[in-house]
Image 1: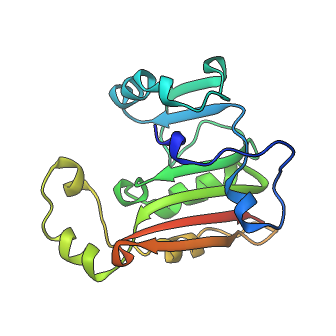
Image 2: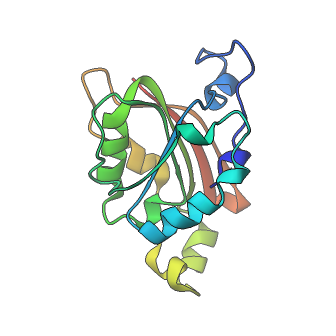
Length: 176
């Protein structure tokens, strides 16, 4: 689990116009999904790394397909995906599902590989099973822009930054 790397919300903060506040929403419950029961088992073993503010009774691990999320529309305040879009067969379908399950003004937090010269070079030198299944040269912002727009206009990119010569991109987007 990578949640220890996401900042916690300060008391009294909520989603507002301050860009840094949009990345610091308090985590009161957590639902983790993966197609692989083995990956969920590994995540469960790391539950002790979660911020102390998250009660383990509020953590759910569920086998599920990100392209067909088993949740009602407008369920979650935040959806997080870290280095996952590159492995999904149809990343736009996955982003559409994230949009569907997010509440209005909900946040999409992504850390992904992105189209850049380093990612294209490294993409041709895939060295292990994980890197062989990943498309490291997807254009993350382009994928987000392809999300089917709801009546309120799709995702608004609130914040984005690149790392390692553009190879990695962090995105905060808000459902409009």
